[in-house]
Length: 269
Image 1: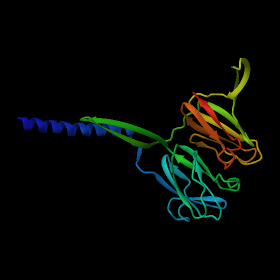
Image 2 (image 1 turned 30 degrees about the vertical axis):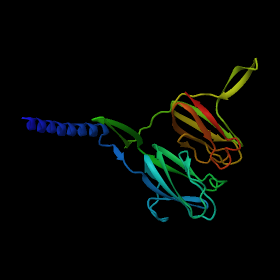
Image 3 (image 1 turned 180 degrees about the vertical axis):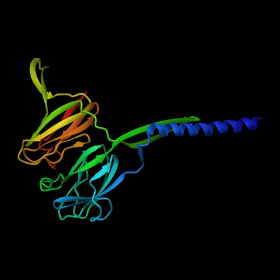
Image 4 (image 1 turned 60 degrees about the horizontal axis):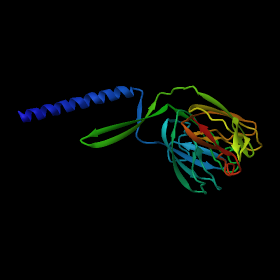
């Protein structure tokens, strides 16, 4: 009788596992795709252009789009001077001729601008844009069995959706300053009321930054995982960036520009 009871419990466990698997598949839906490994892209940097390929061959098939999710960029400097590769707010170190570096970035759906941020390399042609298809959704499942906790994380690429930005922020750049909307208030200092100007806080969510370069040199704008292309004087570009609560640093990532003053912090509430 005891053996029969054990066998019966085992049958229920198998049946329960099958039902759970069916339910999970239903949640993902037929259009979802689990991402267990990063998409690989080979990047060849030279004077003054990038070549992106799907294989480790400089003349291989060109890459103009990637699925949303983790992407590993295998960057190699095949030029004769220093270069780097910057995308989605992250970049490689400066690469000498012949150097390589692997940069893994999680890309959201839409467009991802990339550039070399050394000197005027970007304005000379070392810029580009990748189309990113789908949206990234990460789910975490925690299971506790006999006191043992197992946590699993899955990254899925969902069909592309086009959410609407909740706020629009106008950004102006020039040598050597980035200007965002400000607020003024009076505070007490040494017993006297003084007027203090600071960057206007924004509410968290999907933020649309409209960036205009009013300077005489090329500049870009980087905040969170958002990055404009390198804008020529007089050029504008809008990017959408998802920002959570906290203080978010922004800058022009062209080498040396942030140190000269093109950086700041945006309060997000």
